[in-house]
Amino acid sequence: MTTAQILVKAAQLILSLSILVVLHELGHFIPAKLFKTRVEKFYLFFDPWFSLFKFRKGETEYGIGWLPLGGYVKISGMVDESMDREQLAKPPEDWEFRSKKAWQRLIIMIGGVTVNLLLGFLIYSMMLWHWGETYLPTANTTYGVAVDSLGQSIGLKDGDMILGVENQPVENFKAVPGQIILRQAKTIQISRDGQKMDIAIPDGVVGRMIKNKLSLVDVRVPFLVDTIVPKMAADSAGIRKGDQLLTLNGQPAYYYHQFKQEIEKDKNKVVPMQVLRGEDTVTLQVHVPEAAVLGFNVNPEKMFTFSVKHFSFFEAIPAGFKKCINTLVGYVQQLRLIFVSKEVKASESLGGFMTIANLFPGAWDWMAFWEMTALLSIILAFMNILPIPALDGGHVLFLIYEMVTGRKPSEKFLEYAQIVGMVILFGLLLYANGLDIYRRIFGK
Image 1 (spheres, helix red, strand yellow):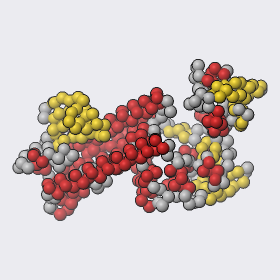
Image 2 (cartoon, helix red, strand yellow):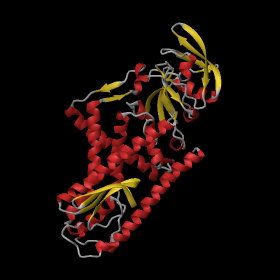
Image 3 (cartoon, one colour):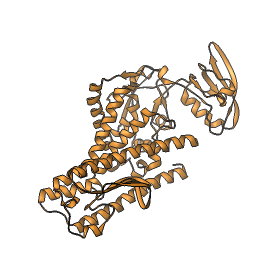
Image 4 (cartoon, rainbow, N blue to C red):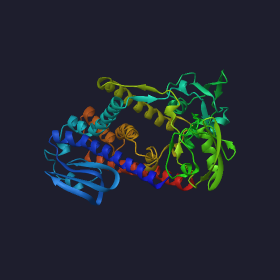
């Protein structure tokens, strides 16, 4: 990965998280103001010891902290991460959080989660309205699949056509690996040379898919050159748009995945490349740099029949809602596997900021950016509503207890619960990002 790609991924992650954090905290800020509760601070990122930027308007200080681990609003009279014991030791004032009715405090606490869910729904709806929905139907993978090493080990072969997973058809080809994992599938149905077959998926395969980031199958795409970057290796070697690759250094490279496998073996070498140009076979000499990037690519959209659905504004609203719910359900199912599946391990499935950043493309793409932002917004909503002290869900749990029993937990209990919750959260944060660093160092 180039430095430019790393910077683009990081920039997209920071912008996405900034949008999500500000709107999440706004979800707490607005109902707090509506119920005449004083908000002392509204911060993007945390500001221990100092802030990068701040200003005061009315009773609230707005600012940007230097520690990019989220953000916060400091609401007067609330037991939160600020641990302001001095204020809590005083008699409650009318404008403090602890003086408000339980249902008002509940609305303030669920405001952030509500905004994140609404944001996910809104982004999906607007994306469907603006771009529509485009995907490659599994039935339209004309050249079959390209199989990775794990797929080969269970009996799949290049060129197989996928018919279903667990005897259930999968309309969107991109969803095939996910369905294998979520269903803990034991069989996958294929067509090979016109003959229908069942391929068994042995125990341990799903775990290896997750651990090694393998998908078993991908679309098999002929390497028909569509774009060429000026002054890079492909351009210097004389590659032209429309050339069909045949071989690289004497090895088959007709399909894109074959080319990717072979070029890794030829770094820092000048090797022959055969291409089909019109009706002629042309041999070119190409220098393969250390990065194994020649500066040319294919365009699958010109080779396959994609399904494209356009939505009117009013059609996009229910479609966006459905996509939001399906995304939330899918994420919960994935998280569930960590606790119920023997093959899925937390150490192989979890990741920190580097893992999240790698989900963004290496080149700025607004469609991909907004899709990732919608996904992260839904994940943020779900994680925040978990009944863990220090998260919104922890506060909600104590408020529901108060509303049911009529007894309010003591401020001392809430303070200790907050400390325990913060220790748990920071431990998980260190663990997840430590996994990223470990994988980066040891290549795992």
